[in-house]
Image 1 (tube, rainbow, N blue to C red):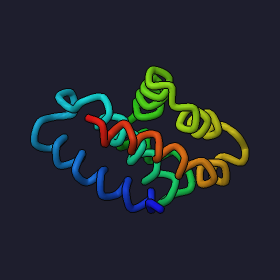
Image 2: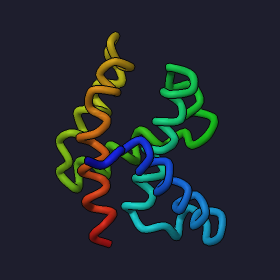
Image 3: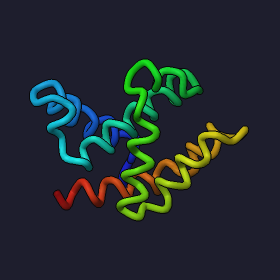
Image 4: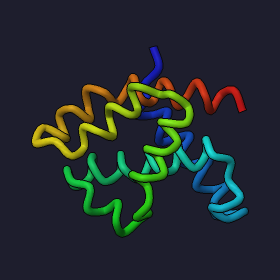
Amino acid sequence: MIDYETWLLDTGDVVIQNKAAKGYDSLPSVEKAVYCLWVIDYAIRNSGTLEPVFELHPTSLQELSNFAASETFPALQLLLESLGSPEAEEKYYSLFSAACSELATRYGHT
């Protein structure tokens, strides 16, 4: 079984290095999606809120939502939709692995 928290950290690190070397706009859409989820995950795990998202990459939520819809990733879409609910943090953790699995599968096919 894959530890998706570790997967996101490791893959996010690769994407961050690519972003630093080439610029965000040059990243493929799946790498942009990984980066956006990394930003959201960082915010939730470190502050329990989405506030850091608006400092790190303000468009993360919208970009990832657009990507999830275009790729038909239901778990990722559900995770993003749940972020506005009163139980956002709890729902985030319960949907995290399924959402990462969708993204990891797509990332592995690029």
